Length: 323
Image (cartoon, rainbow, N blue to C red; front, side, top):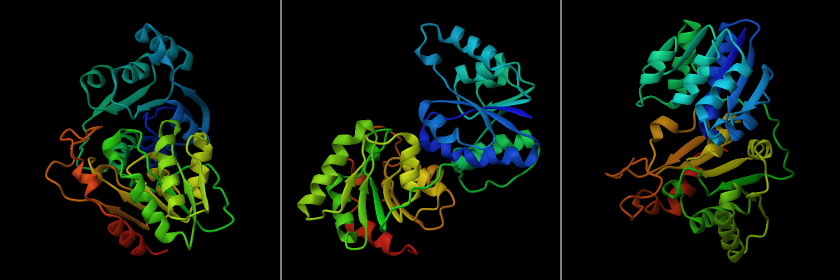
């Protein structure tokens, strides 16, 4: 069975779609996936053993995106099923113009017009469950969402290693503070080597963590910010013994490999995007009236949801994990 899967744009959301993708394997026979998505989502999921084709969606760069989407759909051809994990009109039209036999996406005015199924999903449920509902509709079964799943082999570190992820691509409101990350890492530096992660736009922040660590006389530090591709990022995170992170894509990568993790949440819906089925994980957050605001930057300019979280709280959360 040929199935077209339009992946979410963000790394974390793409990883959270993996249980739904795995479900399609259990309810359909001889499945061949064609993945379409952003560069980061394709780079993370293209190693799936049932992935026959993977395409980065470049239609946004076109002067006429509608025409480009139509041509892309004709290039892809028809499928037995097509599912979109995006809630976006061009993704809906891509499914429609592919002339696939059965199509489905989250409920929207355009999905209700152009697709076979347009499913209403609740934001009160974890995003994994929302995606799973789409797969269950195609399977016509109430399947339970499994663990997150990636097929990139994990890196083997020579010594026990603690990962620090001070960034969050969505915006500054989701980011805890570099000096606080450094103090937490310092506390555990007698037991772990330290690796700092970050994307190309997070190099400065990662550098600030590194400078703070060196000022605290921590020398066993490797800064990988801006130096890894998506495959390497996933591999290095997978091999960690402990991970301290903001609510971010790397947090979900860690959950896919069951890496013990402490995640720091502020302006986002922790019930919707927490670490799915990561056995040894904790969330540190404060119940503040203005949170979750879901804003990229603090609209009130005080950032109290993150600023009020102390290093000691994170350290105690780590101690409570079964390491």
